[in-house]
Image (cartoon, rainbow, N blue to C red):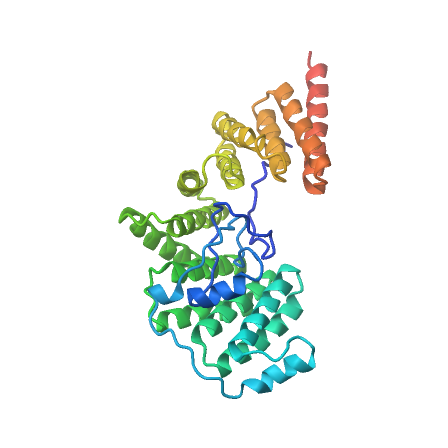
Length: 374
């Protein structure tokens, strides 16, 4: 029995994916502080994005105060209760209150990057207490968002959902419009959580809400990178949801729009384009449109040749080999699967290496059957 072609990145991805390069990968950095306050934190180190979405790693700070009303920084009542704990733990010197808050948040973010989720949660709760004592509304919202992402990374979906709802409520109560990019981004993450939990109705409503608002923004001429990148990410995630429901034509249309948007923002040679071309090829294969599948997968491979360290290249080769088998183009399949095997071996990709071996074993069986029939 022929193997199924493999779609890439069809899961909620890792929070600690990679440091943020200075390149246009569509992944919105989800900061809710005033810009000056956020920059104080992120001058410490280029942490990359903290929103869980594979390869969406564009580091642009949203300016919370530009689009939301109600920015407020209050006094420091009761501050030294928590800062004293930090001093006792050896985590800080005597500093100004806001400086301690920023430092504590930095440490929470660093722990996230290091995969120390439990420690990061503890540190962020200390930061949350500080922010609440200072009545720093922006920082409170931002910390809730970080805690939500930690819960999501730990796959604690109920906790992540509750925290993201809190963030959403705080944004709306601060004056953000429902079509504000920050509101839409949180809504998109909630839709993905509902998808993971199997709540198809809520997931559909969430994806459609984001897709409709972003479509209108783009049609009105909102072509800034943040909006376009969020638009592409929404289309990508909605497409994967539609695929899960076997709504292949709808999924194809979403993936196609996402690819066009990625080209517009990222240019041709970009890892995200490889992922999207692979998934367009996958959808064509699922609908028995093998020639179109081969076209998209070859386009993806052409791009990977210019990105030699891309891990997913091996999987694209094996997928191409699988389609060639279905097309009964066995020599081409053998060449593609061998190249996939070589790539997987080089990058120590055990899952794809196993797939490549299965592909080659299947070809041996097919060659043997072909020889027996001649």
